[in-house]
Length: 126
Image (cartoon, rainbow, N blue to C red):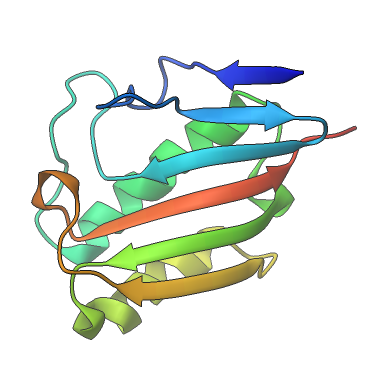
């Protein structure tokens, strides 16, 4: 059975998708971009500021399922510019201390012109 993630503490989906779906003991969260949950506006202009907001949004998604960053087993990171890799990693490393599996790629563009996006898969079983 599928359970759809729906929390007001993270930005609402801006298209025909959900914040995430839980199936069995795994949560598949849609890509988080640096939007304010209350206003839907982009937060920050630098990669560091935007990455911090992305982590805040991921935290809210994880908390909605009663887990935290230690439960993340895989991330996929998208950067608008690979020159931001080191600065992004500095922020990422403060949160994902469990060193989940990860892919990180540069893309031609991201929604709303943001600098980064991160999608996560987390273990939410007891």
